[in-house]
Image (cartoon, rainbow, N blue to C red):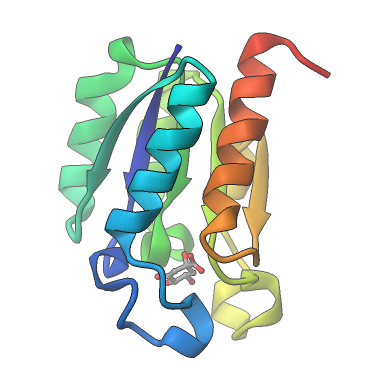
Length: 146
Ligand code: DQA
């Protein structure tokens, strides 16, 4: 099984960016923890972090036939990107949306996600653990586990 992992804008700054909200774990450490979890589950990850909407859309298009599902923290694009939503929807593959912070408990503009309606589910508010929980949920779904 292969999972496409998408990290949106500013997540390259994790570890030093608004640590009171996003914590002190870097993106490299999140990727390391994800890789460890994936290996234990026999899953291969194909990941991209980009600050550019078009690059994320092109990644989705380019990797569609190479993956079985998507683990997505679209960061700010969660709330704005029709293009990324359309790209993911076009793949007809399961999407699990994750966020470090609980977006429902923050500013009103973060409470809307354009991705959530096309997602299998959303994991938010558990810091770096949101990614691991999301990966587990997605792989369980793809494996048909209940
Ligand atoms: C985020 C929440 C978004 O609202 C924000 O723009 C981010 C990170 C999170 O993981 O909590 O950049 O996706």
